[in-house]
Image (cartoon, rainbow, N blue to C red; front, side, top):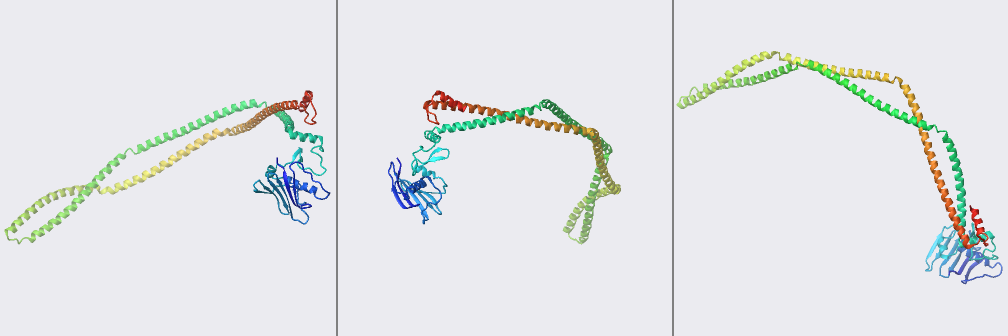
Length: 480
């Protein structure tokens, strides 16, 4: 068994330095009045229960005080107080120190667990220390009220748990009955409010039909738009075909221009060929002139070799001349042919001018065709716009129908919202009914257990008098 072995008091009220050793059983402090007997009790309560608070108990003229409580297992608790410091010092069996500060008005849990010194709860916030008794204090519980004694004994044996559970259960039952009543009133008011909207079923059916008609109109409008676009595209294709046929009719003689162009190209090629041959002829003539000059320079050759050389040279020249003669004749004929071609090509500049004029006219024609195409597209757009204007003559009626549908749709959404809210309230109501049923079942189980406990102990939990089965039934019925 753990008990206080020694107390050391320093600068606490009238005690400068006091050391007291205790017995493990009963200890009684006696002495004259005003010699510090009550101060010892106060010092123990201050060290073990942190009572009283403040620093008024510091000895007059001193700045700090302390109370050290030593237990039989060498556990030591030191309570220290000064003007600037308030602390607990806990020492275990091996002398290891732990310091506690900032704990408020309660004792640190580590100190309570180590010392096993705590107050007993009597009733509500009322507590009592059964280990330490002050002067003129009566025996435990004899000076208390009968209700306090009954509650304290019930707490000591554990009956207060059942009482607390019953109090909480009754409180919960009252709260749930109030909530149930409120929910029932709310449900009645909602049901009355919902009766005003009984006509909404027909409105929902009409709204569904209108929604179907709206989808049908929308689908047919989409088909109409597609067919209108297809018709526009078809008219464009027909006009393009007609325009292409006109162009083909205008350009059916184009192959003659192509043939003329081919003939002109052939004649130009022939002219270039003749011109090259003429240049070659000029070169041959120049070479003949040079050869003649060479022959003139060889007139005075007297020897045979010179004659043979001259003959060879002349033969070679003869061959060349024959060849040149043939070429010359060919060139002459070619020159005559080219002269004929040139005479025929004297008006080639007029042809080129005509070609340029034709190209300009072609460009102008292309611009005119482009403008005509734009004009046709504008006329088509105007015709389509007039058709749509005719179709939209009754658009105000459509807007009126749309506004009516939007109003009905908003009303339908509100009705759906109230329907969902009503369903959630019904669900909450069923949940509360289930919870209330569970609470009633739990209460019946608790009352059955309470009745079983009372039957076993056969003692009233309040006055501790003997009770029989009829009295037990009265106690149980008082909770229902």
